[in-house]
Length: 502
Image (cartoon, rainbow, N blue to C red; front, side, top):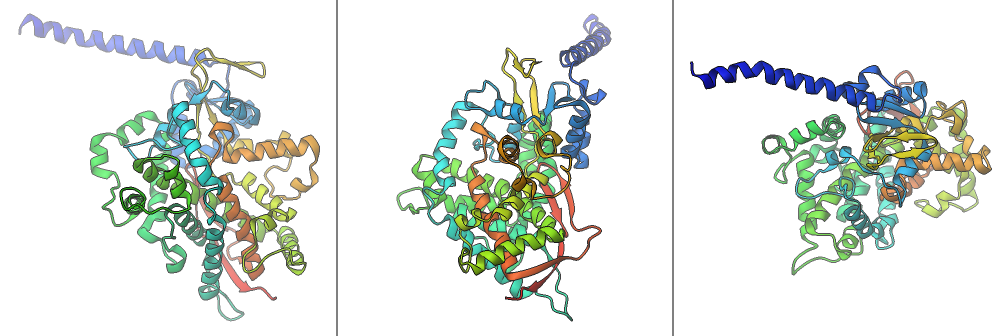
């Protein structure tokens, strides 16, 4: 054996020892850096607490429990804190904030060719992208937005009336969890592509997209929470073996194919020009690839989040006799007095119904639709907030469940669905509640662009359902099955529907 080989063999233990020493020192330094913040012990040394909570689909609730135990800023990873402080969240997202988006957002890059408005971490490029898209989302350059929602409301009512009306002798079970997603998918595909995919028309999961999303979301949450997993998932090998493509006949790939086809029609010599959301994007300078990427994000983020709000709020309404009666009474009186249009209520009319608005706010509070950590990074020099020093480059995560269940904001009955809290509160108390509840859609420079579209849907759909039908939950013991992986994956909300006596 040569001297070189002998040296190499003898060096192995030394290198292993140096590597282990470096790891131990690095781990200790990482632990000490945020030692003043309490949390699970393992969180000071490893991200395994986040990993295990994500695998169980419990990260949303477990972060809220940690904050309830340790206060408004707790540790959940070696360099990650989590907060339920609405003021801190607004501080980090403010126009002049020196905080930036952390690596969590890299996992939201759905198209490997280009960033979207969520995955773009560079503030200058992110702000420019938002500016190009704002008019399309707001409706200023999309005059057909409300009519699109009206048409889908009529499709929803028509489908229920055609297939799911029960009588005294016949039970026709409706899975409201499923049909609510059909509704939001048709709204968003109509808004994004100029025509609905036909979920309601066919009463089916077109392209098996919803089925695919249910399987994909646990993986996506792992990607966003763990940069190493995101790096591996984005590798050429994994992309070649498992990434969806426009040639796929089902799943996300099929939707990508539709997006590419529709977007391509808006570019080139024979381009189609329309006054819709996509047309607004094109007019304001989005490239063809950016339009494809944003359209896919729009459907994935918008349809699932609004469906969660729709079905969760409706579940609380129909299982609470007092709430159900009050809302029905408000709708009936407004109909009698001519304050509700036919066949579909106008958005402005819905905003003038106080109990309806209270139900919508309370539903969003109880079930915040988007629950990802959405971590922000403190500036390199660190930050002082409410007397607490946050070391530089520390990541701070958002606890959606925790923010909306703070007793100091909403009262001791935070776990109860009680719309009346929004009608009883006044002055600073109401303002504090509203500023906290609004965070379900983000705030400041990171606020959700699709918020206005979601509210048009929610403002209309409950009235349209209750002016036409009566609903009863069929399984009060387990009214709906749900799992949370960044969004709420809900199913099996079985209801009995009957015609409402006019």
